[in-house]
Length: 381
Image (cartoon, rainbow, N blue to C red; front, top):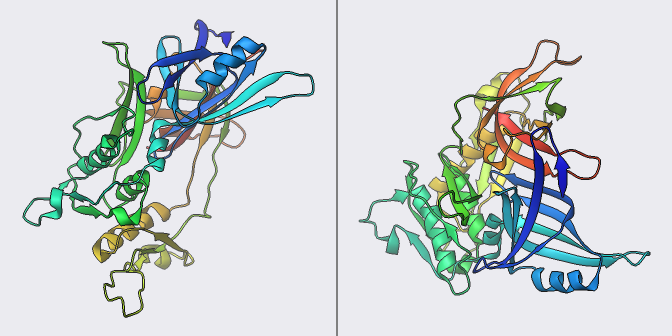
């Protein structure tokens, strides 16, 4: 995949590696490539491996092993995406042409496939005399537990960030909860956080890195100045929806039963009903939402989760998207950074000039007759 941009020649290369050792198995050509990355949910890579001859087909069979192959996408010398191959679909058309359609998920998707191997407590042994631990250490502890099991270490590394928010948590093996589910539940609590696995090349060693990135209350990327995106200009297309289908001003969370008497009926524990009374007084209709939290029966934790969910759901959800030409300012490292969006057209006669935080992006590499573009997913900063 090559294309001439106003900056320079752009070359993408896909490396297929053993997931546990990161040993390179092969580098294969890709077509129809699109990849994305987000804060708060796994990203994906979708592509096709063309197989014009039997030799390349043999190489592809050896490299494309779903569930145990890592995929790294390089743009020039930089890592732009990393993840795990989850599906490969060989196919042949009516003209005898062979290809393999592949789909991969970012490395955090691995934690959707892991459960605890034993009861885990924070602080250790659930001793009341021990102080609560920072919520970031709970996240690191869960990932560390997953990687300590035989065959479980995929090389996710950690920092020493602290959020300043402490908590106590006990997780039972018998709940069979997914590790990612536990982290997402903790992140969604009151005074929660954001997390992702950031992939990049270490500037000193040149090694490919999978780094657990944590931010409280949000992941942010510092910059000397906002990147300005103009329409007319670099912005090719935009969408600024307002969505009230997920809006709520009343919320209740449901957890597990705390009934230990097997002779009586077991009922789930519910949070106190959280109500945004100011919204109702202002004339909003009553809009109710709910959530389920597996493995949690502590009413205090359920109340905190319901309060946090209500805060997120009170305003109509707006998820702006802008499609832009990729230049030297636009890279996956932009996730968490702030941009200034300036639109001048028939709808926006006097703006908006709004600062947004980038919470995700989808990149379409250059192809024949098409330039390199990126779709940015934004939230108001």
